[in-house]
Image (tube, rainbow over all chains, first blue to last red; front, side):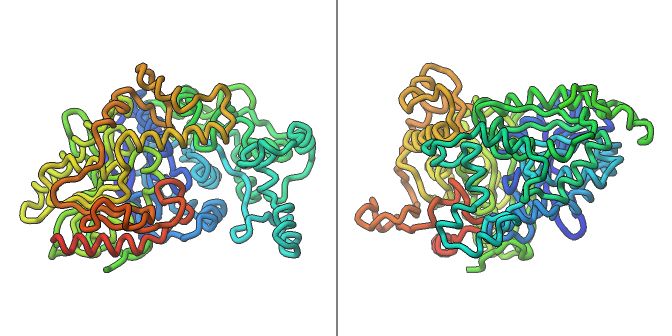
Length: 317
Length: 265
């Protein structure tokens, strides 16, 4: 069963959905955030299906439209890139932190697994790093770990080059054009002979972070991993987000214990998981993982004692 | 016309709620502006991924109507969005039933007001089957249900190609699969034989009071009846396919639609 929830937080009205668990009494829940600017059910209803399945297993699940998205009102930048910039800079972190606190209070929950796809994953990382006691696990679908210069599509590293040159050169130096080519995501990429594997191997071997890395986000992510917070990362195999995620992690997590992170790669799907049976595949990973992180228990135990239960027993990423 | 822009104060209140319909929950948002009210408009949206893509514009349109004195009901079809139910069990007929149920509720709650249906794409096709409405305003209606589903299947083929899906099918192959009774994943939703065959019964041929706004900028010669239809070109790709802006420029469409609904009221 689903119920509508409405919160007023810091002057903003948030509309959400509660998926009532089949058995009452759970003190832990799951909160799913918007995938970019898509409404809270997610593309193909992914978030709604996940929340239904969790509730059927006795786990209360919630989905909220953050301000400006879906049914929640608020000012909206007209340009999509400006919206992405807002998300990437943690623009939804404050209100989501408030939402986590309010949800725990009103729903009598001790803690939450927080997650989402793409932009939802970004916000989950920022909030997870802030809310050490209430956020006990992260569900990160296609996390976007890079920033895009809003006006040009250029990265900080090649901004000057892009400014100096004409349209042809701008194309040549367009970081995302190259990334799409590398990830086989551009409409023309199949026609361009390109030693993808060689270049990918070269990139993986590099010891520096890409210039486009979202550093504040990476810091938050590193803190979460150092902290041992269980995280389930699901990416579309071989696609741009995954390539970038792998490259950043390879550099950022040298010498850090990453056993709390489980990374699942889904073959034959796209960024929003609407192909190749990905929605079913995501559900089959999420349900056992949420149960295995150990945060979801019918207990009213003190927060301090729950840390140990939140350690992931899963193998290293 | 009072145009609502994101960030402006709402005109009245918005009440999101569930209608309990024999084990199913239909998600409805009622926009109640400050009185006096002109009429009620029930918004019937497009299907599946088109719903996700168009949602911001659809909500903005509902708020614009509210700012012009219309009570608005918008809802999700069974198995889609916030409404419960299995998508695989749905057909055009079950979705037409959803629309009729919401129109009935709207009529019950606002018995003194006229009730209009405004449908976009699938919603325009389904809007024809509502017996008890006082007018249908159709936006971008496809020629029929099959034509619309075939168009979405072509998008699936294009996505298969871009994403390099191995062993990808053909248009005919996908239709054969559907007709054989297998479920076919299209833009994340499981299409069934029931959905495919029901679409055949929904050609766009509205009767009663109606007005059609084609959104492809077609010339007047291609309008079936210039008295009840007009044409407008909105940006390409249209807002239900791939939003290129979060606040798509739909001023002309909104303006003409408000004018039509005001004239009917």
